[in-house]
Length: 131
Image 1 (cartoon, rainbow, N blue to C red):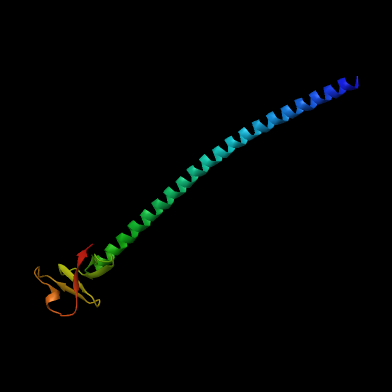
Image 2 (cartoon, helix red, strand yellow; image 1 turned 90 degrees about the vertical axis):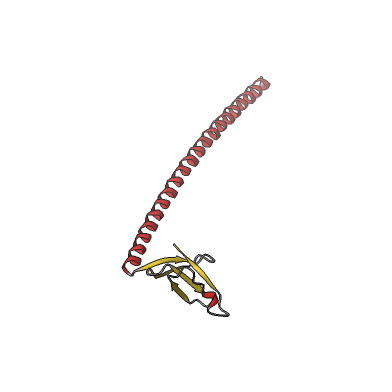
């Protein structure tokens, strides 16, 4: 009789363990689903934030460019870019060509054939490009 009770207890413990293990598997599966859903939601939220930031930057850049263009117009200036380093210069818009020397001096000229390198020995000049 003691063996029957012991056998029944072992079966009950085994059934309880099986039930517990199944419950843990179900819980792990649900937790995996919740984690996946959270990751999906988090990725969508991050994409939305990134999109909003990009839109705000684009809008701010457009306003900045518009303000800069207004200033250039008001001051009768034109934007030029040094093609060697990308530095920008706002110079008079009354000339068609702008040159920058190695010492930082700028020369403005309307003559298409003008080459400042022939006029100042020891100084190198590069033409600035209109922006």
